Image (tube, rainbow, N blue to C red; front, top):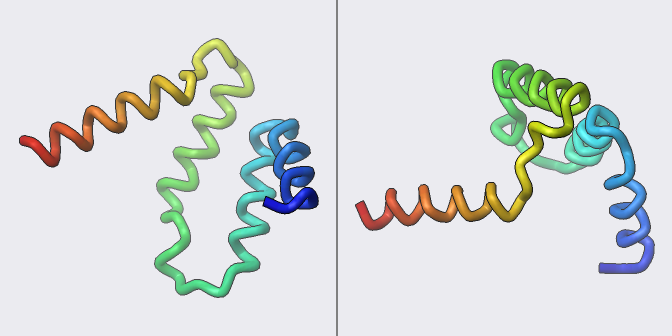
Length: 81
């Protein structure tokens, strides 16, 4: 990653969740992709609700290492099962 990109990412991580989501949307909108890339309105609402819940109660956050482990376990069950 370039120094400029590292700086943008570091600043982005310091933003509140709603601002991070807005920044992601703005960057994604600048990509040349088809409509299938975008989240449905239902998923968009769910993500907004969950971000708001975390803003109001950060103790509900789950560490990425736990999420990653759980996802890996689910994929492994699906592939092996």
